[in-house]
Image (cartoon, rainbow, N blue to C red; front, side, top):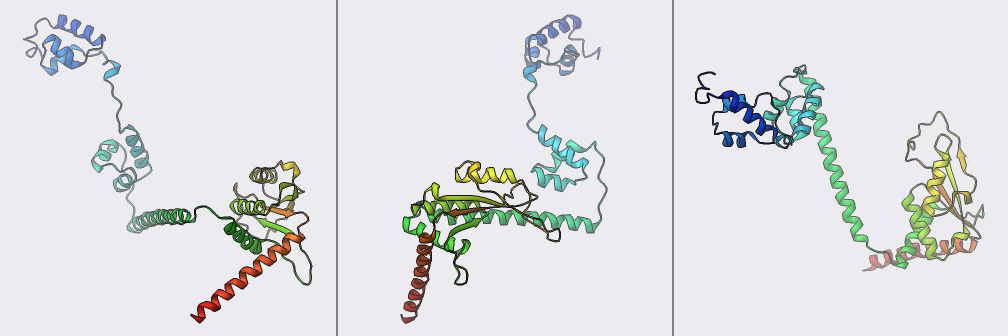
Length: 291
């Protein structure tokens, strides 16, 4: 080192100047040009022990990837799996994790299972994307509903999900039960089309005893736009321990019962509309056979 310093006999004087410039925020390149010191070893010796200014400490874009790669490696992931997960090169992964212990080598059966699982996860992702695109395309074809279309949609909805009159049990009442908030919204829009005001609607929740009853009441009240205090007493279903229920979890809010007071006349109209729709289908089908 003494031989390399020969050209810079006043090393200590140069070092004092270099340190002063470094503290002023100079980069190594500017110190080099200022002091005319073009030997990198000498230049580094001149500023040794003095940290670089903050502005020269550029953030590393791959720091997050590096940390994640090390985390996965410690979990026993191979380079191939890390590369597939993070989308970076094996060369970078090798540099980031080379100081970590190698994961235990898995047998061929386990590797085959992991590969099959990865392929299946990819297949599920593809199916989900196809499902999403199909739904969006179908939704776009609907557009707005005319009053006639909403009328017929509501009649069909009621006849599928509402209570119906029987010859052996006359119940000409309009009562609708469903757990789907979208179905409830469409049904209420249909009632509004028919001129049924909120003052004629009665609401009640039906729900299993193990669920969040108060939360469900608040949810349905918010959906229909009324105070939960106006709801009728909630019907609590007792749980049968021999039955395995799937309608559990935070999203389970039971069913909403919507009843139209003084609904006998409306029920008769609904039944008439439905009969007309069925007769129309029969006539159209007969006409198509004659063509």
